[in-house]
Amino acid sequence: MSIFAELIISIALIVSGIFGFVGSYGLIKLKDSIQRLHAPTKATTLGVGGVLIASMVFFHFEKGHISIHELLITLFLFLTAPITANFIAKTYMARNIKEDELPPSTSSYGWSVYDDPPGTEEDQTRLL
Image (tube, rainbow, N blue to C red; front, side):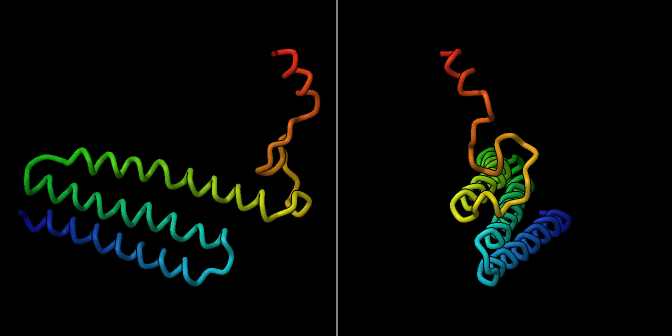
């Protein structure tokens, strides 16, 4: 394996290790659940993603092909981690924050709590 490949793999592992450490530290030190949510989601996305990318680069230079399994895991991780964090944040808001404590919403649905806009009940009954 060339020195260039080893350098890329080493940099990817070091960067992902730093993100993992910072995310773990943030999970321990931050006070609120919403603050705690931010650190690990970024750390898992970038930390684990970096390890998987380093592994793909290693197998590309060692065996001559990219592992499709690792590529699919990386794509799945990059797509699902932000969506999961969004769902957890909305659930926290719905359970722990009163609607009048939030700033005004420009949407007719409000903040993370589903409220039918005025007049839609009649429209929904008409559709049935």
